[in-house]
Length: 467
Ligand SMILES: *Cc1c(COP(=O)(O)O)cnc(C)c1O
Image (cartoon, rainbow, N blue to C red; front, side, top):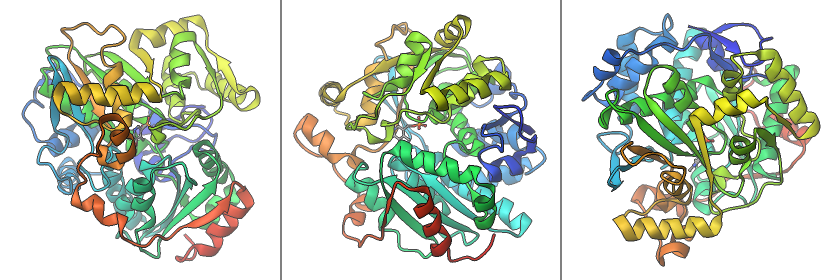
């Protein structure tokens, strides 16, 4: 499979190059040149298979020519064996036709592990083949950082620098990153927002000289291989509920648009997805876009769901590319408008096409607490504040009662004990593995929201020499 940039001006790459490159040289994001097609028979044949087996089938066309199907299956088996549930991503029934997909059984208790555990292993394979090393520089709104660190831990060809907004991630989230003691892991607390951190990383990527000097690679959700790994759980969960013989809807708490973009990809590959509901918190740029066709930045608001406190969703560019029939010139122009004027509007037919597929819903902090309380009262299940946006959105936009809705359970509620306690009067039980991080010493560097300072720190702190 070959990969093309959403802005149409970067070289066409193969899978390994696209994965190691991350952001395209024209500022765009890589996507497969064509969407592989899964027939009804192909999908039916997934019923009853294990998660690693489904993963190998769904991802095979994307990595064709790079890894043999058997080796890929070995890799997915090894990857998902570290999850603490035999079903990898089990489901819990919340209501007659509403299902919670528990994506948080990996090492850091959030869905990011599903992709990053695999990505660490894919990187390993690629770097060993090339006999080279990389420096991962990533921005996190909370969960990516720890999952990236866990995914790269023990892989000696990878050094990791994670930028996070100082004071804007939960204690547990911060400690999951800063308590990892390893020479090749660096946690940078930036005096700014997540969008600031993300902008710093993007700019560093655009700095050719710097990128080459440190052998920079990205594991942010701009990395195609992460989106690829997330497509799998749309197929796996839909098949459990009767796809392809019935349509399924999904409700996905969204920030950077990676998780829900994987749903659009699954739909393009033939999975019968009736609706994709974008659930946002008070940072509702995506909901406003679906309603109005206008994508316009506003100030970031801090909420109980910090991993969704995002205004500029990097993967949204991939959706725009698809919604504009893959017209890279238009995407280039829209992104220039976004950078210059803080927003853009799409043509009416594109806005209409968006609403054919996506619904959108927003939930403010009061609503989040009420929703955690409601779900707990009705089913005894405790959801985290991100997932609560998804459960509230599930039936709010008119998805027909006979269509099952799969709500993505994005994080374990114990990662957000304060919000849960505010909602139901007590914190959720903390798994032992999570409790351990609360006692360990932290290692963190505080830096200003300043490109030169961050670049200087990375160059100086890097232990592994040149790439
Ligand atoms: C990352 C994350 C999100 C947002 O997912 P995107 O793929 O960035 O849209 C939502 N909830 C939690 C708990 C997360 O970790």
